[in-house]
Length: 50
Image 1 (cartoon, rainbow, N blue to C red):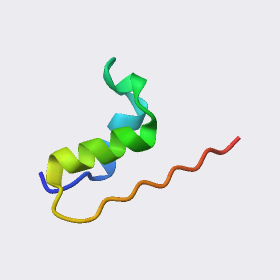
Image 2 (image 1 turned 135 degrees about the vertical axis):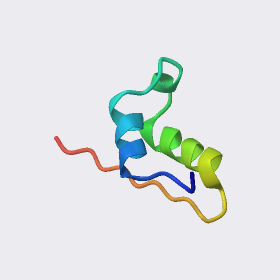
Image 3 (image 1 turned 90 degrees about the vertical axis):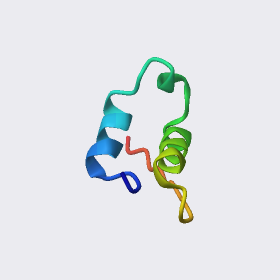
Image 4 (image 1 turned 180 degrees about the vertical axis):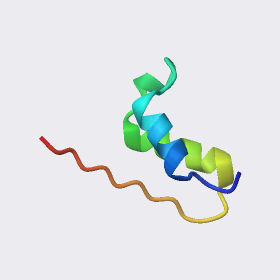
């Protein structure tokens, strides 16, 4: 796989594993993006809507 695609991002955010639930969402996404393909710069921007 080359990076995180929409489906993988959705799965990580909606159904994280028990160990992943302890991490802030932005950190979870960055760590997984690095694990999949750390070839480029990685940025995570999270917006919470109330």
